[in-house]
Image (cartoon, rainbow, N blue to C red):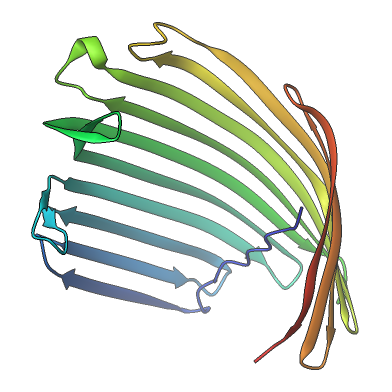
Length: 253
C-alpha cells in the first residue's frame, strides 16, 4: 500500500564521467561494467551503461555440484533535457539478455538432466518532471516493457515459452511543507500475454489491467518518522480493494 519514490541521479552540468569496473570470483564468476554520464551547459544530459555477467557450476557445503550457467548482458541509455530548475524531460531504453542452464527438477528431486533457456527483456520509459514552486512538484511517467522467455529449448515436447508485454503510466504529485512530504497520484498498467505455451497449457493469451489511486504522508520529527498511507486499486480480474499502510515510528540513525 505504500509508494516507492525513486529520484534518479543527474549528471553535473558542463562535464562527463566514465567508470569501468570488473569483478571476479569462484565458480567462473565474472562481471564487467562500463558507465558514462555527462551534461552540456545547455541542460542536455545523458547516461550510457553496459554490463556482462558470467557464472558457472558451483558446489554446496557437502561438495555436491549444482549445474549452473549464467551468461547475461544488459545495456541502458538515458537522454534528457533540463529547462532551468522548473522542468526536466528524459527518455530511457534498457535491454537485458540472458542465456542460462539450470538443473531439471522432478517432484523436488534433481533428475540429472540440464535445462537450457534464454530471456530477452526490453523497457522504454519517458518521464516529465515539473516544479510548480518550492513546495509542489509533479512527475508524469510512461513505460512499456516486453519479457520473452524460452525455457528447455532443446526439448520441444517440454518447451516453456512466454511472450509478455506491459505498458502503463503514472501521475505523482509531491508536496513538501515543514515536517511533511505528501505524495499522491494515479497508476495504470496493462499486461498482455501475447503467447504462453508449456506441456500442460498448449496455448493461452489474454490481458489484465489495474488502476490505482494513492496518497501517503511521510512525517519527520527529528530522528523519528512515521508514514501513513492509503491505496485504492481496481483490477480487471480481482476487483476493487482498498489497502492502508502505516510504517511504524522509526529511529533514523
